[in-house]
Amino acid sequence: MRILITNDDGIHAPGLNACEQIARAISDDVWIVAPETDQSGVSHSLSLNDPLRLREVDERRFAVKGTPTDCVIMGIRHIMKDAPDLVISGVNRGRNAAEDVIYSGTVAAALEGTVLGVPSFALSQAYAFSTKHLPHWDTAIAHAPGLIEKILGEGLPRDVLVNINFPDCLPADVKGVAVSTQGKRDQELLRIEPRSDGRGNPYYWIAFSRGGGNMGAGPGSDLAALNEHKISVTPLRLDLTDEPFMTKLAALLG
Image (cartoon, rainbow, N blue to C red; front, side):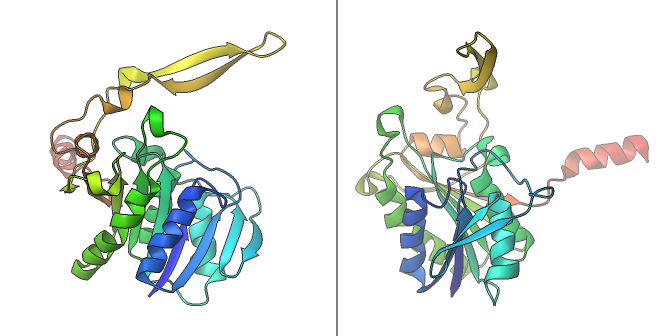
């Protein structure tokens, strides 16, 4: 099995090393194509107005001055002579649950793999304020290979990727696997934090209230699973059509 791995935290991120260990537990044929710098929050953006700079870091390990989506396209369409059998994106530093999937470059890379017809997984390791600087990478490393192989054995539907979030706990403390819906946070926690530079000019950060990520965790959601120290597994579709409302619109406008 030929595996392409990428991420959005950059070529030097420790989560990418964790992802490589996961991939090598599945296959010896592993290729790494990741952004030159941190691309967190870029979603599914493409570099259409700038050239892509490619740097070979090591054998089968490349850095791209571009987005995670650029990396997947570059890997599949240019670097690898034969298409991969699997794309693994991650392991992201921090969970990609609820609305995170809209903004996440990690999820977007797996989306792009799915667009190009390759079974794809997005992997993320949750952390708390106390473990922010040293997430439990071993939890993802220990549990991801078996999960990926089991899901691949069943087969992924066309145009569906799998988003997996690992809880903020040691591998032995994981309480199981929860097949989850995409959750929804309390958006009142999102805020703008104003500051001033050395010259007194204002600038702003988008910020979340501390601890707010656990709020709004509905039953059966990815957020609820992580709160319970379970691995959250959520299938995501490329097709964003809301069919029930489409039916209503057809009756209204047709």
